[in-house]
Length: 579
Image (cartoon, rainbow, N blue to C red; front, side):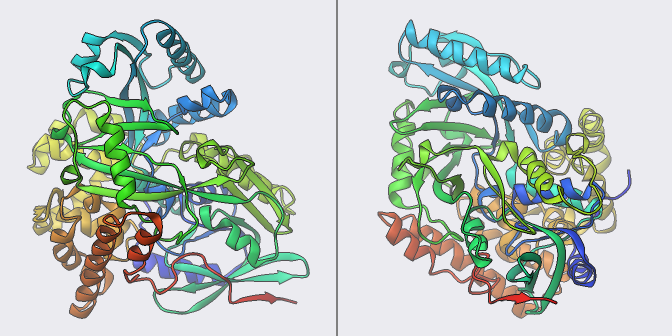
């Protein structure tokens, strides 16, 4: 197959220059899953598209989810059938067509505590869930006795259930999925750049006609003109709206969700768990050699660039998990913690768990469209609706959205590549488990890594501090996947930061040395990147020792940021009127 577009440092610089050298049809602000989806949607309609992101692709909410693509069982209880049906349709597309290399079905048990009414009530709900989803891509549900449920999940407390219902949902590597969306958009002609912060807007009378974009790596300003701008900045959406005086339309409220990660051997089970809590639901999710346990759902009004998990958050999750686990988990079992902010549409409720997961698209100022709300699974629908609104009155009509028929890079031919994985293992001289790991991360782009290894056999060795990953994966993250800093590699291109007990500190120096030639780093740059990463980890660990959000936020803010003092989309320095 032909090589996919590479998000290299050279291509990033070229993209910024090209954005400044011509008028775009659409400029997308925000490199989360919705912004990435909007860039792909617009470029596959034949439009000239740019995307800028102040930090890294998926650096915010889109790398800190529960790693699920699902309809949301709890939304059935809220009678939001349309949202559930829409999300289940998107789940099927992601699992089978758009990203089969990054997503897969995962089983869950719903423990029952009442023999008759709850089995009937939950059973009807799960049956409706299956029906709305058309059972596309996942097996149907089944009822289990207590004995059968305990066989599926031996670590469950016997007294915690009288039976269970098993059903399936989808799981996705969210950070890699978002990055692959961007890479696919670039493959189709979009100009994309990270570390590119919008610091101003261009206005022609009442219409927004462009943005001033600051390259945080070089400090250079670029004036980017665009017929339409899409604000897909997630929890920073309101800030961008205020910059141009757009105070109408929906408001975004941030809800903090915290997840903890524990080793797979701490829980004996062949399925995940979903169970009710006093305010929401708790997931215990299998994630390769680990379990993800989450989530919290609390209002957050502090620093949005670095939401902090507190000791209270971790204790809450452990307590909720231990309500159903036969062998309790303790703080010493937690190897990773991450916190993200859901961009919910503000409503009348004071509880973020009750705010809408619907999305809204508005255009309060000519030339500017804002998309907000929603959930990860429905990113493609949100992106389509945002582009529809942006191009509605373009002088030249744009084509209809076609992204439901556009697989992500690495997806084409994946099933055949997966079926021959043992042959591939023999050809590469590695074991089959290693090939499965690589296929689940790169799909058929594995051919590009194999070609690199043929030229650079030194990159075939596992990382000493994170042996699950090969050195070539770090190299490829910088050479082809848009990583500009050590944190990008350890936190999003890989999951070393949450899958190793030392949070990736032991792998930091080796990874920095691997990527240094690609990124043009000298010894001083390597030392600075390693020091920054270690300081970031220490700040996060300190926040997790603090009792509440306020003190945890203060501890987290103590870490430097390699991309500069301000890493949000921030306040514009100017709104420039153009003739």
